[in-house]
Length: 192
Image 1 (cartoon, rainbow, N blue to C red):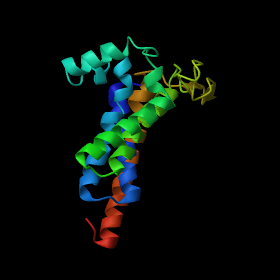
Image 2 (cartoon, rainbow, N blue to C red):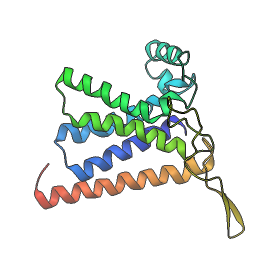
Image 3 (cartoon, one colour):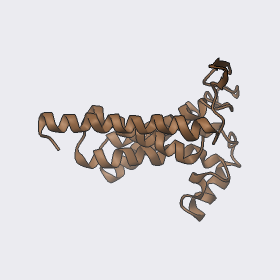
């Protein structure tokens, strides 16, 4: 998936979490943004990703280092369940240092996990169980089906028409539905 789709999926997941947990206003605003930012981070293992170029020289240097470490290939170490756990641990340490709300850790890990979930829907695998296994994992079976004479692929092609259209529409609908739930909660409880 492209960086913008990863960020949108992170934002949508963060916004959905706001809709069901009704956090304090600071978290309601910052949570989806944290989730969107962390949804970009697994692609620090790719030289031309949005994450690599997001902060100029510092993020480019970090990406350069990551790509030279064991498992630093694209869709390997940073696209694993181990990386989600490390992300949560690092976020917890930073959160403790700045005395932030603990829920920020959840938003960070959720964003990272959303990135991996998105990549599992594409036509290329991830190393989900790295470092315990280098075996590639595909999230969706590679079947095709015909609907009204049109062949539909289940796996998404990165930056293909399904990602640019249907997936982004689906994410927009999640955000809209979450917004309706938040507004419903506000009107029913009077809480802001």
